[in-house]
Length: 278
Image 1: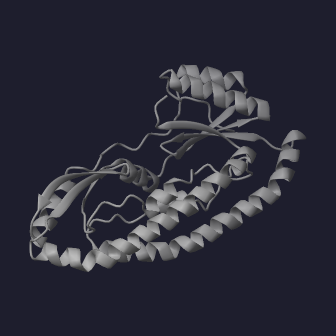
Image 2: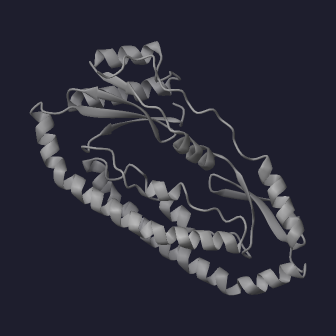
């Protein structure tokens, strides 16, 4: 199955509005030194209220979940299966029971793994077999821009003396976006949260050390005793492309390199091959 598509059963009564992935997708990149540090500092001040909102929403959802499940067992509500493209919701299936929801998820996942498409004739037969109804969802331009930002390589000048082994952004990546969406993932979330705290502590400690020696490193680069590494970062992995002496030449080199890295992919059209939800 292409890693662009995923199928998940939605246990919670509504799709969560406050997700840490919202902040992670907008994490300012470290490309222009002090300006990036300022942007990241301001972002982190906004991240704390988002974290609180995420925890509060999860608490409300988990208080309501037992009542929602009882209502679904009594036939008072439907089960929902979300189809996602690169994490963006591209459609929703409505089925009558938990067994049908799990069966549809498994059948669609297997179909996509075999190279099928979510809107082809084979998928339509699977949907009909479970008596599911389908509602296509148009991926917004803003959400698709965040997908392209995440998938695209980007260029940066490395201000610090060495490439950090840990970062706050990497710590956020430890927390999968689906944690807390169902009873099993709530239990799985505990070790992930502990790992997040550990990674975050290590990232902060390493950052403090690098900031402490940064003035000396920048001074040596300004007098051209050290070069500026120009790196390309793709999906969290960085590789040095150039070593440039001089402040302004390094600015031009980074911008020239960055100009050709941005991916350009058309936003997926809504799936219309399946009957719309009535």
